[in-house]
Length: 203
Image 1 (cartoon, rainbow, N blue to C red):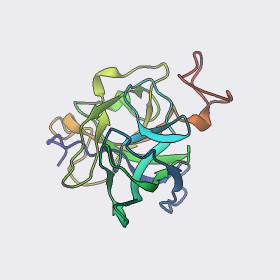
Image 2: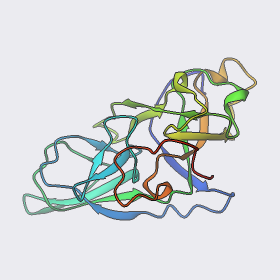
Image 3: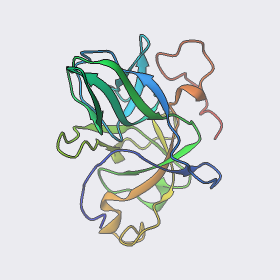
């Protein structure tokens, strides 16, 4: 039920245009000793050739973290999250990095029908994930709705029981289908450090 706030990050759902989603990912390096947890469902970026979790809502993202593998103390590890400060070799992240992927994600407060179907963009709330489940704490920051550029553009509510925007109790923490506006593949500069100003990229 979406009457309960339980932010768990971004989950690939399908491709834009209702094409099927094959859960495809690409591999990116993580620097040994990188001193931050990265959880499944976190938004991530590339910095100096390595993958990092975003720390501000204005950053341009590479995609969504979907787990990792690395060698620590001579043992191959597979994990739903990157443990902060891990000394490792061959550390590789799996990232859902297609700019046309649609993600399911929960809002941290009430949204309305007027926020849907491309009407508004939203920033994200960068909540802490769980080292027990490995799952993200990222979500949509409902109070940031804007018609200018922000991290996510809403599409429609997730089609599941208890997630009805017409029901006041259920829209309190609505689960949404969104696409990533501030994605590196939506910008054409050789090096992008912040979103460009002006019109929203085509969607």
